[in-house]
Image (cartoon, rainbow, N blue to C red; front, side, top):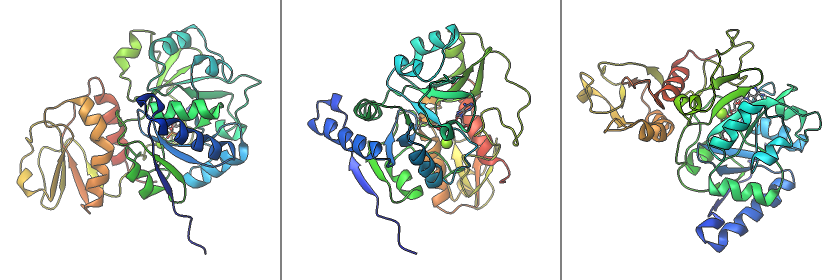
Length: 333
Ligand code: TXA
Ligand code: MG
């Protein structure tokens, strides 16, 4: 078997930073993408692995690279709401959400237009499509340069923790072109809201529920959510998983455990911990969200068999943080 090609890592600079390299790196990414290649790039939430959404072969290569089941559809990333309207139908609630939060960490699941140019494989044959307008300048430059929608799942192997730095991407996916734009500012995936009949929250994420509820009423999520037929198909119970076992709501630390702390370290026996990382010593949920995946990766890399996790409050971004922790702790398939 031949070794996979080495990954080319390119320092990404946004054109808007006034750096002349910005346009050039985006143009390079656009050339690779237009030729059916895969490019990893930062967004404001996590790193994405991008492919031309209209090229079925490129989309197939993307599923293969991630080891992702092809029944799990992808998010189409576009430059603005006008480009979203070419793919999907936005009802008045969707229009209000788009006006309030795009560009930004909100994904809308919408009815797919019959003339939508996105490959059927990317939407797993569904009659809906997930669409998002990212705000990260590097992602925006690449989208503008390529001039078509890009599907971009989080740039990790399927089931692993999402990457928030270029180094995380490298550790998971070899042999791709990758744009290093530093740490992603938010560190949690976008919030997903379906605007089909009623607006429904499918995945808590970097945009807190309360902000969405200022713009639209959220209906009850469908109750028929099972691992066999998940509501957001990628929302399997065990997901975002590190190798280590997670012990949630830990009030104490057992010998040999690593500790993932939040706020002042109150866990009894914390001095026994093999390693302590704090999501936010000052108990700030925004900082905690940004640190969550990189701290899980770092504790995992240190070889702890079990990570004790101190309680994280449920308010604001805490909903999404607790969602990811619960999935990381769930029994593996
Ligand atoms: O922040 C993000 O959203 C990142 C960055 C890179 O943009 N992307 C991301 O993509 O998290 P991914 O593929 O890792 O997660 C997308 C989720 C999956 O759970 C998938 O099942 C769900 O969106 N999804 C995609 N299309 C859907 C649809 N038509 N209906 C319901 N859920 C859908
Ligand atoms: Mg993902």
